[in-house]
Length: 220
Image 1 (cartoon, rainbow, N blue to C red):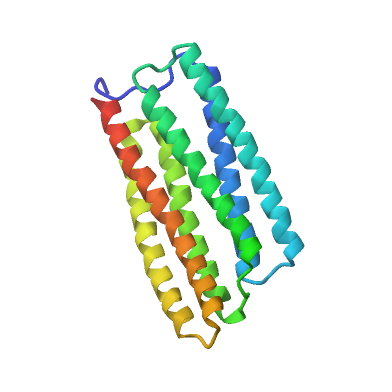
Image 2 (spheres, rainbow, N blue to C red):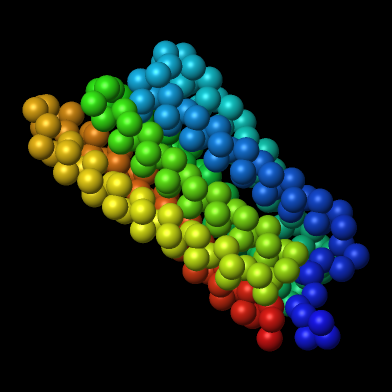
């Protein structure tokens, strides 16, 4: 179609490759983070396995940080993508911050170590999976932004649906935790963990809101 928005990249294929690698590493980090969170919260693995996942995630974050710095340098020193530079930098920064927060939350979980209770294992598994689906959906939307900006909105509705469902599951779990026969400290730690997972989906939705604006600007 004559009025179709062109891809963001023209001849900047090396930059395109860097951004693809960055998005790949973010996606890998999200998967590792999910596996680690479930391993701890569902009580299915020894602590050493959880720590291995945390170390994996830390290394992935390091690589993502390196890639982001390289991309920023290229965008400015070679004057690439001048019309979309600000939006691209904000998007990459937000995605890295999301993974960084996920890693920090996982690390905090391994420090405070709320009691792992079998009766909440399924609930935490469902909540974690739903929050991660929201994060993965916004990653798909981000990839689409660089290829076919007009199609971004097709993926953003999924982000909102997953965020709404995460809210519902978090509310249900927090009510169960508060009603449980546990010490105040344990109830607080478990409730904060549920809130932390809920917040991941909220952050993904916020990135999705930004993406919708970026895509509209690209189509003008």
